[in-house]
Length: 416
Image 1 (cartoon, rainbow, N blue to C red):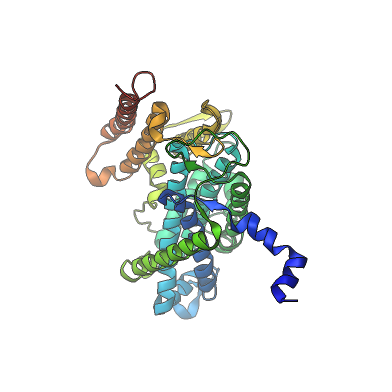
Image 2: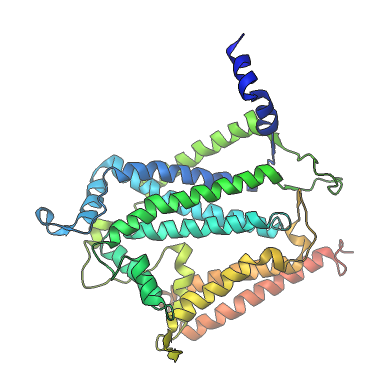
């Protein structure tokens, strides 16, 4: 008896191959955004494990190194080694690429209505994945523990403390007491290297299990009939070996691009900013949180009033109310959309003028808020930024709706 036959009799490998390795995958390029996010997570874990060998998660001062925090000194040590600097840069750019891939993946899901029944759970998992990725990036931002990173994290601490009624307790819990303290760096190190990866791994696993169960969606082919049976076949290529080969090529291309970025584009220069000092530099968050910073810039800093013993300040409106409302609406998208469910096929973006208009208007709102973050540098006053923030999304949404209606005709069919 051969070894493959012996294993097949005990593990039912042939049945496993037929059920899972033969699953079809759509070949449209936008369907690779999920794979890009997955590969980014793998690269982040690999480079993070390497960096953890040299990083010291401590804010204790090292007297023999100019009385600088141990975390800051270990970051300089990593940067002094060519391979260490390369790993740190790859880790940095991969984090940005993962956030971008998750955002674009969610946009594809939204504009093709792939969140409708029965895929609401995966929509929520995708949003949770985005939230966990942002949280992991925020936790990692502090770890160099230089003047810039401490100042940037202090903004988050101030926002947490401004939460009405529970702000002080919440901030002390998340930031391990008064920020910065000797316990802050170990706490954020645990967030970044333990809790966030566990959350991401669980969310990714749950997402993949649901995809295997429900199958991929695909773009409807010309002449295809509406799906009528649970076992309808998805047009694509099998997981093994074709899809695995494409994924392997994609992974190598990604690794090459990230290595090129790491070689030519430096990241956060800790040695330039130096260890934490009483004087705080002007800081702005990275692109994925710049819209929150812009929302804060639009709210008058002196806005403050009392409500049931709590102080409601500008941070509540700019950093909580606006992001909270936008996040709630995005979470509820599958339940706000009353369109028909589609088990296998996506819907063209132009098929729903309202969905297209709202989606593009929301993207424009995020871009306008991000622009507000650079208002001072661009010489734009707050009233002008308010006009842009209000008018631009409305104009883009109206134009998109009119364009889609024109393409579809007055009754939703082809024009003409």
